[in-house]
Image 1 (cartoon, rainbow, N blue to C red):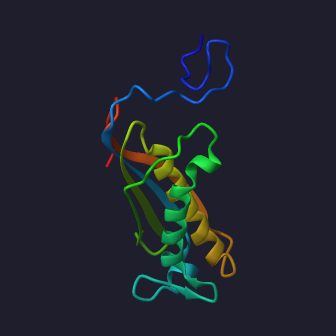
Image 2 (cartoon, rainbow, N blue to C red):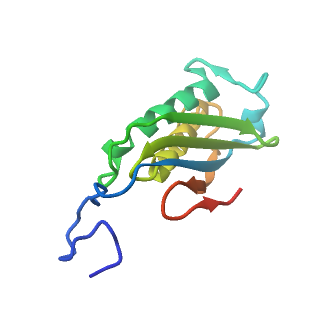
Amino acid sequence: MSNFTHLSNSDQPKMVDVGEKKITKREATAKATMFLGKEIISLFENKELKTKKGPVFQTAIIAGIQAVKKTSDLIPMCHPLLIHGVDVTINIVDSEHIELFCTVKIEGKTGVEMEALTGVNIAALTVYDMCKSVSQDMCIKEVLLVKKSGGKSDINKK
């Protein structure tokens, strides 16, 4: 038998049974670092860029929130969850880069790492989509889980 929880004793895919687990407060934060370049960053005014498609960061934040809510539809072994809160933030770091964060909170029997990672990825992809008419030299450089609490193990990489 493998150590993967999503495989049965006969190595077939399965969704983990969380029925016997205790309900706990759970939280996860994922971070993405994105290269936009000086050309795009220079177009921002008051920490926002308004395009024909709408405000870039505000649209990306909404997309990230929607993605969190749809994670179990996208990733086969994720449980549908009653999300208590989602916070997506986007910051200009320097003349070429932005950082995106997605924090998800629940009280439940399973963690929200995949929801946080999905939210931050979709927010970054939305920024890319909204800015690609200016430059396609953008790059989502790094995506990682920076914080997780409430389950078997905690993570804090901040």
